[in-house]
Amino acid sequence: MKSTSRKVVVVGTGFVGTSIAYSMINQGLINELVLIDVNRDKAEGEALDLLDGMSWGQENIKVWAGEYSECKDADIVVITAGVNQKPGQTRLELIDVNAEIMASVTKQVMASGFDGVLVIASNPVDVLTYQAWRVSGLPANRVVGTGTTLDTTRLRKEVAAKLAIDPRNIHGYIIGEHGDSEVAVWSHTTIGGQPIVELIKQKDRLTVADLAVLSERVKNAAYEIIDRKQATFYGIGMSVARIVRAILNDEQAILPVSSYLDGEYGINDLFTGVPAVVDQNGVREIIELTLTPEEKRQFDTSCHQLRAVISTIGQSKVS
Image (cartoon, rainbow, N blue to C red; front, side):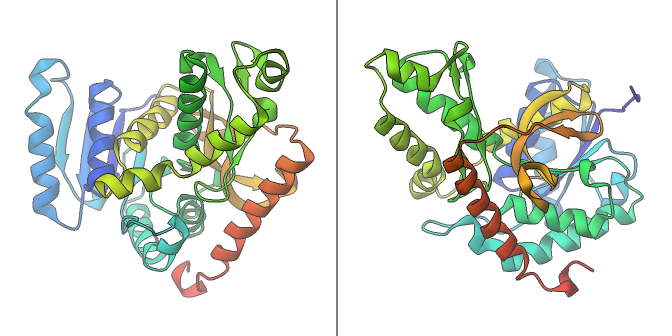
């Protein structure tokens, strides 16, 4: 295993970027944290605010507002820069401006000599992960999007609430787009090791109709939060911290991140959320689930929609 300095750079100090920084510090994941933002004063203010709490337990962490040149020796660069999703707006509708921002940020990161793992947390995340990979020139495995990590935690939360069971004992995945075309893989969802489809047959606490309702609740979770507080950031902050932990600790954890598909699931040249083994180099391998015909149809539709959006990004934006 390669040694790491446990240095992470977060680009973008909006709600998402600062929530990621806060989560990583509180979990004791990092030794050094660099915050970069077009608004230097904002980045400096966030660094100072985070430093104020260090003496309560994580006083050994160095935090400062920096420049892109400081990405050179970072283990991970997390990119959150971009325009936020507004009430009533889909993630895919953010593509025009955010594709340009992602290209610009990625070029500046790579110009530093960065040779670590890029973690993308900007929306639409699957499309922008593809954009970052194209611009960076890094191997596909070292560009990782947050994918459906947040959607998957939402799925477990909803099932847990329905059945009054600890969500840590519920295992299952959302795959595909982090957005409206995402797919709940019920055929591989288990409760304490028991397939949820078997639970439906044996108990009266859950029905097939309930699964459809739960899927919709997961899919619409962000819209509900945005309608109430204008943005979502705590959940994704903790989700990114989980990905960072898996990389820095070489955990070889299986997480539903946005990964490059090269024939898996019958899909080529596309990043989307699928279970993957995450280690110190990013995505080690993709776990290819055997989907039901309906799940496969939905997944193919999701991938088709993402590919259509990618095709609208002009070559000038990825060159």
